[in-house]
Structures are given as structure tokens and as C-alpha cells.
Amino acid sequence: MLSSLKFTDEHRPTDAPDTPITKARAAVLKGIQNQRLFIQAERTGQPVNLTKTVTGKDGSERVQRLRPRKWFWRSPQGHICLEVFYGHRALPLHDGKAVVTCPDLDALEAALTVIAQSVLAGELDAAVADVQATDKRLRTKP
View 1 (cartoon, rainbow, N blue to C red):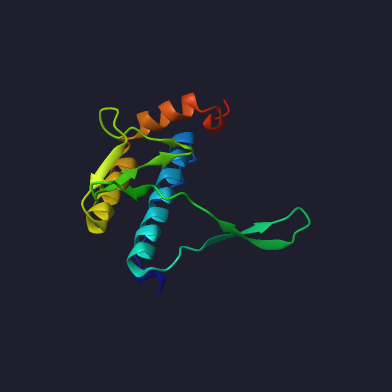
View 2: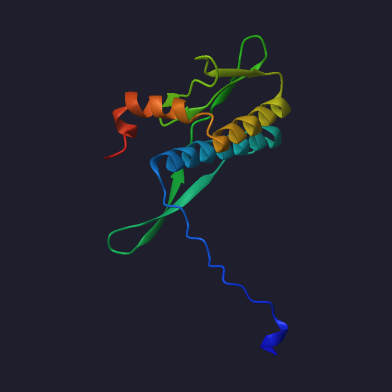
């Protein structure tokens, strides 16, 4: 029966280790996902409730409420403005500018998609590295 199967000498690839830049990319992408939740909440009028389970030293578990920061706001002109954050600092996205303007929530969601693709492509790695260098809380250990 085994002779009916096709065999190969290939091996399972090992997972790449988490580097500081992949961790930073994951943090920005997690923030973008949170902003999509805020957009959905704004459309439906429901609050955003994010939680995580924390395990104590004694093994007990408790649910902790997360309070992510909203990255967008309405300008006095009626546009929606968006800043992308890494840690507590806004990332300069293009030519040192950190704010993207969008006419409505659909355009805001499209802008977040473009920014997420840029993060995955590594286009914002230099901006993240600059923020890491200036904010001592975000520096990685050698």
C-alpha cells in the first residue's frame, strides 16, 4: 500500500527566529488591527472591548482589559486624520510626515491596508529603527 504514495527527501523548513525588526513589524500590524476594530465600532456605534488573559506567578489566571489608543480623529475641516504609532511615538510615513488624511471611514480602512502592506514589505523599517533609537523604552538589548 505504501508503494502507491509518492515520497521525497524534503525536510520541514525551520521557523525563522524572531528578530527585533520582525517583532517591531508585528507590533505595528497589531496596532493596525486594533484600528480596524475602532473603525468597525465607529460604524456600529458599539464600544471596543479588548481583553487578554494574564497568568500570575502562582498560576492563577485573570482577564485584563486592554485600552489601545485610537490613531485617528476628525479634523475641523471634516477629514479623518490618521497617525501610525510604534510605542508612544508616531512613525514618519513619507518625507517626514506622519499624518494621513482620508475623506471617510472606507478610505481610512484602505489607507490602513496600504500601510500594513508597507510594513510587511519592510518600507517602514527605517522609521521604526529611528523611533527605537530615540525612545529608550523601545531599544532592544544587544
